[in-house]
Image (tube, rainbow, N blue to C red; front, side, top):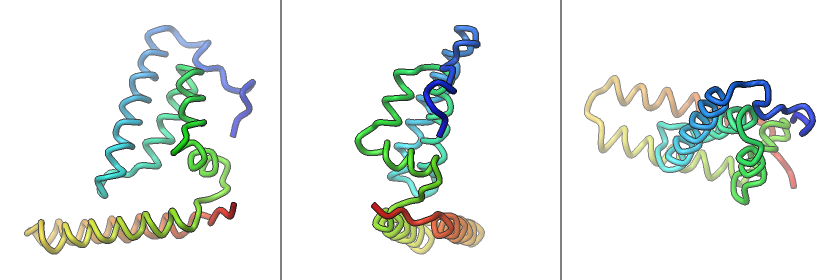
Length: 136
């Protein structure tokens, strides 16, 4: 992760550009929160996008997210390539497969959507399993 001195927090940007990054970061954070409950919406990429946007717009929001009591450690470990805790991997994969399977077998009628849901679940599973497992 970049050291604080390497992050310019939008100092070279115009005010409207900083505001655009701030709005994009906030929208991304909101989508990340929705992704916790909706299996089709990824959480981690949106949180990482929020960090990127906040690093270009707001020192306060950047440090708030990096030090967030729930997400901060996971974001830092992911960005620093330390990995994801095994407990989180198990929880995420269990939730993913439960919700996607329920949707595919009981909610969706179109076979192409069922196939798409399964392809997404397999893809996300592969991505999560490829991440290093973080040991505390």
